[in-house]
Amino acid sequence: MIFKAYDIRGIVPDQLDPKLAYAIGRATARHFEADTLAVGRDARPHSPDLCEALIEGIRDEGTHVVDLGLVSTPMLYFAVDHLETDGGVMVTASHNPSQYNGFKLCREHAIPVGEASGLREIEKLVPARASAQAVTPRGELRVEAVLDEYVEHVLSVGKGRPSLTVAIDCGNGMAGRALGPLLDRLGLRTELLYVEPDGTFPNHEADPLKLENLEDLIAAVTRVGADFGVAFDGDGDRAVFVDDAGEPVSSDLVTALLARYQLQRVPGGRVLYDLRSSKAVREEIVAAGGTAEMCRVGHSFVKAQMRETGAVFAGELSGHFYFRFSPTLVADDGTAAFVAMLDVLADRKEPLSKIVAPLRRYSASGEINRRVRDTDAVIGAVAAEHTGADEVSRLDGLLVRYADWWFNLRPSNTEPVLRLNLEADTREKMELERDRMLARIEELGAA
Image 1 (cartoon, rainbow, N blue to C red):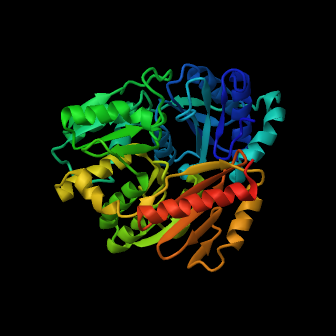
Image 2 (image 1 turned 60 degrees about the horizontal axis):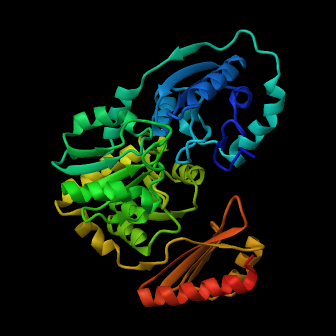
Image 3 (image 1 turned 60 degrees about the vertical axis):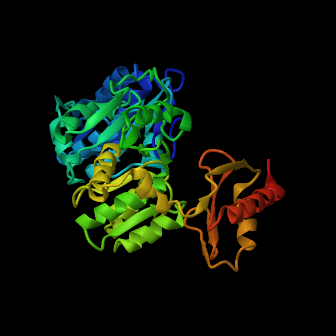
């Protein structure tokens, strides 16, 4: 089962090989009814073979291909919009270990394709397209380089060129592809870690949400006295920040920081925030003159809501930060988040640890996972016990708010697991309500 909620992903060659990549290419081109698709790839050892097969499949449907070569996922998104193609395919498995690979799909203007917006239909087309006769004439292939234009594009989200020292860990992922030309423009002092793309990920897993993968970055920040550190994931669409004291900054608080400066570009604009975010995020957006609006978890949902509402910026706890780059392009981009963070430091002229400190005014549980027999039954039972709350939302799972605490209970997309996030005004209250909630989940249906 390699067709997931948001992408296609599996172990090579057991679950995904060039033959299947060819069929997926054909099915994608057929479903999109595309004239031209852009294709890029990451640096995993099997990406060239999978990419070549994918391109052959697309061309055998009579669809033209723009081969971008080695790029990050945000570079592919940019190219789809900039080159005005009918969509794109990125060969990557993001932060997954090196034995994995897969495809991220998007339509024109980098509109994402997920389970409910085309992936299931593409999956159904795969068996028939695998052996179908090639369309005549075949699609043409051309190679395009978009690196220079992409660097200009990323620089557009910020205005500051501060004199700072920054530690940067690319995790041997694709964010390193654009880093050199970008740093040439920024004039920063840098301590660089694992910049060269290497899809075997020889130094650490390219998943900055795991604390163990930040250890080298934290050490570098401390060693050189950096103003902050940033780590990117495998395909470059996520970023995680570390302050000058070597303390990771929660991505919801980064959303609050960056929102203030994105609102300077569009005063009074709308900012979307992950419904699992601290109360401080909404408060900071409103204080900056913006309209704060909750969004459900998942990049396809966030981007759709940004397009529907005209939001200028959004952030998720996963380290995805979304920018309205133009009237047509809404995209998540870890490198753009890094550029935007420079504005925060340039404007405040204070250590990041001091800037963030007031935002850490509430006490959060962090995400806690519990395996249960029936996620819907447990959520329904918990909801029935909180009908008297100040606010109850079913936007994504169950969100319940009281005056001095709140919680969100969400089911996993892939397994019988509930994810609990809880926050309170004090640590004592957080621990009390957290322990009560976990005990109640256990009573209602722990597996």
